[in-house]
Image 1 (cartoon, rainbow, N blue to C red):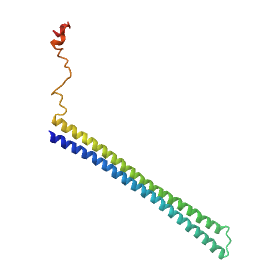
Image 2 (image 1 turned 90 degrees about the horizontal axis):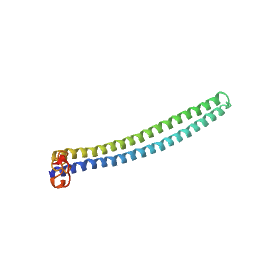
Image 3 (image 1 turned 60 degrees about the vertical axis):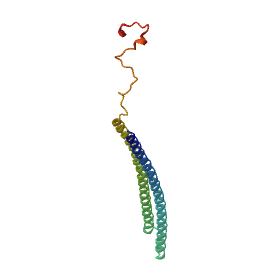
Length: 171
């Protein structure tokens, strides 16, 4: 009986401890994912800045080539420069959206890991409780037939307690 109790306590404690360690590992993993998301965002902004600088240089180079060839910066050449600016703006917006989406996905993955660890922890507690009830049932821990102090409705008061009590039911 004592061995079953001890094993139940150890197994239940191991289930709960496993859940605690799982939550701790999930917190570390989520923190790592948040850091990766932040780093990804910084790298993305650096890429965008480089691309914007390259685009400004390319646009300036286009303008110089037009001017060297004797073409005035109006009409078609101006439209080409404007098109270069528009395409660069669209590319920058797409780069920014892609980087933000990837960062959001990493953060969501971290939240999911933490949620799964919480569920695992709760399962550990439920498993420990279920094991305790099962072992307690087999060991008779919940047996209420052995000693009960609750009054039974079919038995009246003892004869000693009926002194002065004149109810026919108890005679």
